[in-house]
Length: 274
Image 1 (cartoon, rainbow, N blue to C red):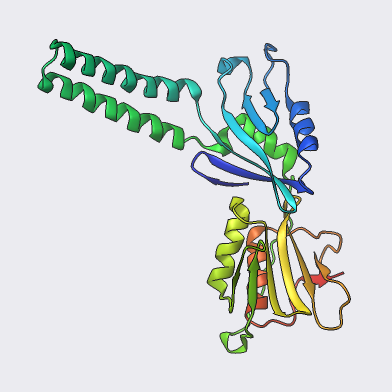
Image 2: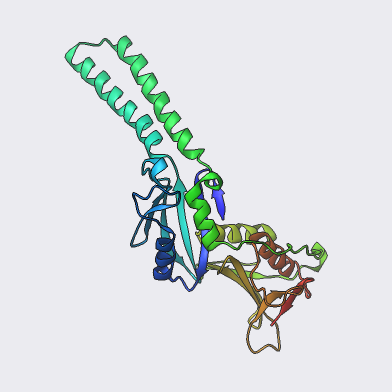
């Protein structure tokens, strides 16, 4: 899961199966008026609205969208306390209307209305600040989604030795079929992979020639990487050498492997191809 403030993004599976994602979320939900702890809410189309049981007074704590993105599906949304945000945003609306009507009918002088408007502005800033400070990692409904859609444990991360800059071979980058960078630098590649994580892009293909390329896309719980070199009939999928059945990599690992390719690597320690 990637987050900035109250925002979060889940990679939830290959092939963009939105219907299966809806079913899995609905299985997590208890009856709305059941007093036992647990997530409550509804899923309508691609919209997800969840809260954490009776003790939260049925306040939405998580609003998100299920979306397809290339080879993967994602849940993207934000967490917040609806009651807190609504109260702090409703106050300035009421205060502004009161001050404006007072100025119009003469019951308030401009110097009397000014402090009200300042307080209204402070309430808006406070409401936005509290909303953005909401931490998905502390939100019980987001934790339930994490348990459902993210792996319970992570394998030991890769640590690759990068080739020196002197071995650089010109590499062309294709991003989601919509733009190219030629030649590509490591900084361009890292930005494109971050865009995949954020849902702005779908895949990245690095190519030294038509028959020598590496490609990466979001997959179940992470990223898949494929490589084709001269002599290969088809691209081969990357797997961890220490655990040959694990073909999923985390974002920083994908950056390492693909950066090594940009810098001219021929071999990738800790990775095997099948």
